[in-house]
Image (tube, rainbow, N blue to C red):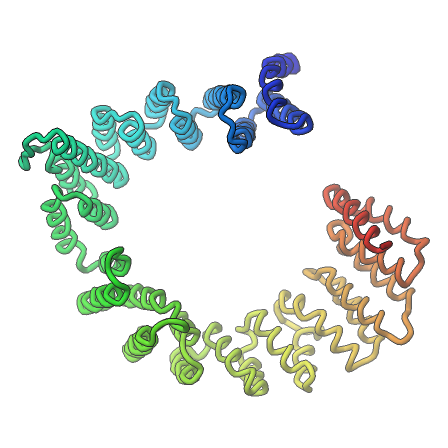
Length: 563
């Protein structure tokens, strides 16, 4: 193994000389060191795919650095050529060991296309098809595209899609690729006829899209239920004047076979909405007209849901746009509400997009239909809490088992100075509490502050000791109790050290900031003599990565502290 790597290193001598012309020696040294590591990994007995792909990614990154210099000299071009050659070799070596990996073949083919290695590309495509063509239509799609777009070989592309469709009769992606290249090729031939001022023959199968039509008819025989495929075919024919008859035929097929499918109507409506050449108001009108037509034919929850989602998307900027959008939203949503078609998410979004003067009415309608829906209750509480925090608290108390952590935090913040705060903290932190652990974690610091103001310091300390030893807590509780302790008229250094020791026992393996806070406390309030001991304790307790980061953090903080 070492001999192979040494040989590879010797082969790199020319590259190293060229790299040193373009980069600093320190950068070249890092590149060579990294390449040596990758060469060793590729020679391991138990090879991993990542041993090869990570090396390739690294070499590509070096190539980008060379290209970023923007130099067109011989050295740069030669280096890039050498890197391309090495990457090609690594891909081919990797595929000897991982020939069953389709994604690796695709990556290799893409690389060859980008590097313009067309002779190798042909070989790679043939090899990939031989190995995977019978099980993967993806490889065929990929190969057809490369043959037609990059190698300009329509005959080979046709052979490929013919073979591919014989093996994968149900492959919509293959049908679409074949359809697309035949339309494109007919357009190329048509433009050639026009340029050469030859007679255009509209009945010529090569010019009028007849081959594309044959593919469309074959798709009907094999994948007739794939609306997405036929709609894409319909869209593609719009781009070609010679295919107008085919566009009409596909449109009729869609209407006949998919008029009861909500996805069909949703796609048609959104197609109107995204029309590139029409003004916004007309696009919105045409889109909603399609939905109205759809709902008269397919009056289902799914159809209503698609319609409402699009409506909410259209009015997403309703607070800063024309009044017609606000009126459209109000009228359409009320109509859907009257027909009992709104889901909780629709009510919530309606409230968020409406003026405050009507939000209460919308929320009343929503709660009438969904009295226990958490999302609606949350919006209700948030809307009410500023004007009537006690009313919001009563709603919260009746449904607290449904409330998110954010609502718990909001309500606690609003009533922290009120008698109800005691009730909340007893619910959350009593010995028999069944409250969610995440709520306890988020409210822990607020609870300690509340205790320090409404009870004794000793009681606050006891609560900290209990909370810090519970599962799911973090070191923020330590920060809170330290702040409370340091705000006392007479600071108890011994107690604060105990708090730090307990917290470091719990979180000392990963929390470098905690150790740093402990050191800064000793420097500011305690005994600087203890800093050395705490520092070494941190290094031995923290995990390896965190320990290295702690050394950097310590150096930076101490420098700032001593300024």
